[in-house]
Every structure is written in structure tokens, then in C-alpha cells.
Image 1 (tube, rainbow, N blue to C red):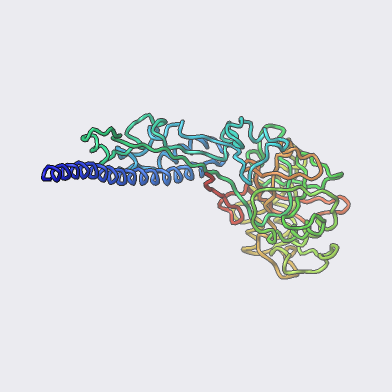
Image 2 (image 1 turned 180 degrees about the vertical axis):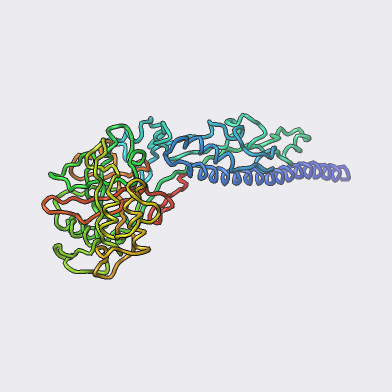
Length: 454
């Protein structure tokens, strides 16, 4: 009987020993798994932050990819939950192989691979379903950042020491001493704009292998003529279909008169076909206090007031060699100032040191508007004579007439135009604007959007 009790006690002790080992193992597993999960969470947050920092540099300018890598590397610093070392990531923790750049990933702001001209914007191969590799700084819109010890080539990075599980080795149980994790994040840089009129022009320098934003001289005028037979050609003026509106001439002209009704939207476009001479001219001319067009532009309306200065300015005397519709910026300031002010010009301005028409316009509003520039109706803001006009790579986008939708990429974008004079005609309606700069993310109506996609 006593022998049986001793045997039972011995069995209990063996079971308790086994149970203690199991409990120790479970506790060790729980603690170390928690450490690994915490490390992975921190790494994912780091990858997200690095991808966003990198994407902010993808503005299609030179060295965009190099700047993106540098931004990601400078952002992050490891701590004990990341790895065994505490130092800036640098090129060791984030080598070039940790970055993948894409031009298209299938987001709502991407051009479709089925669209004409897709390869002009994205010449890289499809490296993943729906994702196309970027081949240059210009077509880089997205970046994926991967934190991976295999890419880093350093076992001390993205690695955490296990504390409790190795103890089981003393009991003859084979366990790992360390745990590693791999995380990645995909981010992109796109832009949207607010309050731009349904107007666009084709890039005159596209056929020359360059871009409007690189070549157009600030202060030069552009002749923007309504196109005949619905045809687009380099440098011509064109209409866009307003968002959330009908396709008729009245809808287009209302938004030309007051682009503030457009709201904010991604930088996408749909071309507008059809002849709409009289109403678009009338919508434009409300900015000059002229209300002689067809309904509804027959009378002053607070939705489309005149600018505080409606004086017309002279056009340039000569043309740019690339296109006769583009001026050389040599307008006759001296003659204009003498005719409208009759006193010495400020700021040392003259034909030898010529200001832009927009600078003169701003000076006149701030000081003394010429009599010819005083509107007879209550004036709106100074910006009534400034428009953000879309500039499109029409050849690459396959715009040759008819209705066409697409994406306005950053290397296209928006030219800020000062309205030089009222529209002439019809039947030959001509609009003139002076280029005053490229829309930037510092402008109130231009917004850069940097976001995570994966």
C-alpha cells in the first residue's frame, strides 16, 4: 500500500515537472511573441513614415528618386525594439534595394494603361499586377519602402533578441535565439486643385521634347484661340467639361465666369467639344465688367463681378520663335504708363527694366488705378484676372479632337495666367493671357496629396 502511494507521488512529481516546463514554455512564448509583435508594429509604423517622407520628394524634378531615398533614410532611427543597434538607418539599413519606384499602381489619379499615350507617361514594364515600374525621375509617382534584414545585409538590423524562449534550451528544447520581421509600405504623391476654370491648352513644347513649365517665359503673353472643327493642335485654347455639370455652352461659360463653383477635385480632365463662341466670350468678359453677352451675362451679378482694375494692357510686340501665338514679353510699358498715368514710373520701371503686366496691375490696385480701369460695378477680388489653366501633353494623351478623359500629371499641371484684355469677337474669339508662373503647392488652390496606398 505504501509502495503504491510512493509510486503515485512519484508520478505526480513527474507530471508537475512536465507541467512546469509547459507553463514556462507558454509564458516564454507569450512574452517573446509579444516582443516580436511590438517590433513588427514599430517597424510597420517606421515603414509607413519612411514611405510618406520619400513620396513627398516625388515632384517629377531632377534627382527625385535620390531625394526620396535620402528623406527616408534621414527620417528613421532604430531603437532596441527594432534591432540590436541604435543609429540612423542610412544606406546600410535602407540600401537602394529597399526602394521600389512606380509610375502607375492603379489608383484613381492614374492614367489607364489602355489610354493612348500611356507609354509616354509610363514606359516601364508591369512588374506586379496593375503596377508599372518608373524609369526616370519624371514618371516616378509612387515609392515602396521595405524594411528587411536580407536587404540590409546585417543580422543586427530588424532583429530582436528573444529573452525567455532560449532558456528552454537548457531543458534540451531547441529554440531560436532571435526573431526578425519584414515590413513594407507604398506611398504616392499626387495633387489636386480647386477653383480652376474649364480651360486648357496643349503644351507648345511637347513636340520639341520639352515642357511648358521649363520653357515658358514669365511675362510673355499667349494667344488662346477657340478651335475650329473641334480640333486640338499644339498651343491652342480648348475647353474642358466642368465637373458635376452638363456639357453645354452655358455650363462651360458659367464656370469660366466663376470658377469658384468648381470646388476641389483630383487633377483629371474631360475635354469639351462643340462650338460655344458667344457664351464663353461673355463669361470671360464679366471679369472686365462687360455685361453685353447672351443670357445670363446681360447684367452685373455678384457671382461674376469685375476685377478691381479692368484696364486692358498692350500685347507683346514680337513673338516667340517656337510659336507665333506666344509673345516675347516685350510689351510697351513706357507708352502704356505715359497714356494712363502721365507721371514718372515707380520702381525704376521702363522698357529697359520692364515689369510684367501683372506687376503693374497689382501696383495700380495698391496705389492709383487709371481712370480707364475703374469698373462701374462693385468689384470682386484681385484674383478675378488670374486663372489657373491646365496645360496638357496632348500628343501623348492622344487628344486630337472629340471627347477625351485623362489625368493631369505634375509635369503638365497648371499655368497661372493673368488676363490681359477682354475677349475679342465673335466670330473669331481670341483670349489673351500673360504667363505669371507655374501653380505650386504654396498656392491657395493647389494642393499636394501624399498618402499611403499599401
